[in-house]
Image 1 (cartoon, rainbow over the protein chains, first blue to last red):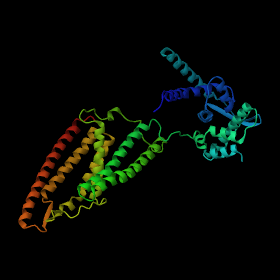
Image 2 (tube, each protein chain N blue to C red; image 1 turned 180 degrees about the vertical axis):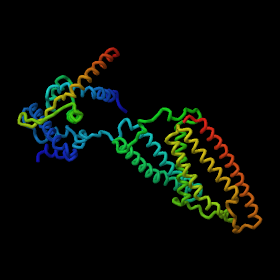
Image 3 (cartoon, chains in turn green, purple; image 1 turned 30 degrees about the vertical axis):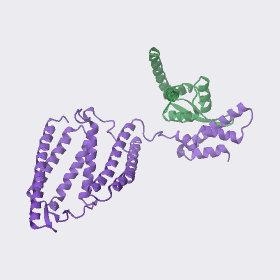
Image 4 (spheres, chains in turn blue, purple; image 1 turned 180 degrees about the horizontal axis):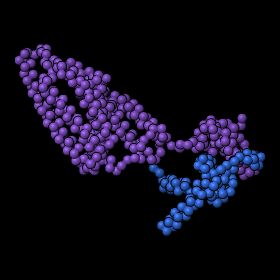
Length: 109
Length: 322
C-alpha cells in the first residue's frame, strides 16, 4: 500500500512534468548543450533527470520547437540546442497560460 | 574497449538505426561530463569501479534506449479502461468455454465429475484465459499504435448507450449475451460434428433404442442457419446493447424461424422411433404414447413462447427509438 510520502511524490512528479517543458523552452532562448542546460536549470532550483531531459530535447526538436547543431567545444563535440521561431511563439503562449493558471490558483490556495 | 564504450554499444544496439549515431554521440558527451564533474568533486581521476557506478546510476541500457522510443507504454491511459473491459469479457468467455463442456459431460455421465471439473478449472481455463488475454492485449496494442483502425472509441453517441432500466442492468444484458454466444457456439460445433460428444446409444434403460427420424436430416441446414442468426444476434447485443430496434429485428427473425421449425417438427412427429431391445410391444406402445405426449407439450410451449416473442419483438421494433 502506498504511503503518504509515495502519494505526495507521485503527485509532485505529475505537477512538475508539464512545467519542466516550459522551463526548458525558457532556458533555451539562449543556445545551450544538454549538460549546460541541466546545470542552468539546477542553478534556479529545477533539478531534472538527464535520462528524461535528453529524450525531451529530441521530442521538442522533432516537434519543430527547437533547432540543434553539433559544434566542438572544450575539445569535444557537443550538440547545441536553441529555441526555433515556432518555439518562441509556443513559449509565449505557454507562458501566458502558465500565468493565467498561476493567478487562478493564487486565489484558490 | 573501456566501460563507457561497452555501455554505449549496449545502448546503441537498442536504438533506431537512423538516430543511433547521433544519440550515442550526445550520450557520450553527457556521460563524460558526469565523469568530469565527479573527478572535480573528488580532486582525482575516477577508478574503473567509480566509473562503473556512474554508468549504473545513469540506468540500464534497455531503460536508457527505451526513453528515446516513440511509444512509452503498451496500452495508454485512454485505451486502458476499454482494454480492461475486453479482458473481463475474455475471461468470462474462457470460463464459459472451459466449464460448460465439463458440466455437460458431468450431466451426461461421461467421466469422473471431479476429474472433469478439475480439468476444466486447472487445465482448460488457464490455457483459454492466457490465449484470449494475449489476443486481447495484441489487438489493444495494435489499436494504441494505430495499426488496427477503430473509430468506435471516438465516434460513439450518447444515444447508442443502452436505455436505463431498473429491471436489467447493462452488465447483466452483456453477460447474458456472452453466455448465449458461448452456448450457441458450442451447439453449432456439436451440430456440425466439429465437437464430438459421445452420448452413447440412445436407449431407455437399455430396453428400447431411440432412432432419430428423417426430419432431423431435412432440418440440418435450417437449424444451423437459425443457430448462426442467434449467434449474430447475441453479438449485436454484446456490442450495441442500445440498438433496440436492430436487436428487436433479430429477435423477430429468430422467433419467426423458431415458430417455423416448431411447426415443421410438430407435423413430423414422432421425432424419434422406438426399436424394442428387450421390451414387449405393449411396453413400447406405452412408452411411445408418453414420449409423444411429452413432445406435443414441449412443441406447444415452444410455439406459445415463440408467438409471445414475435409479439414483443414486433412491439419493440415499432416503438423503439433506435
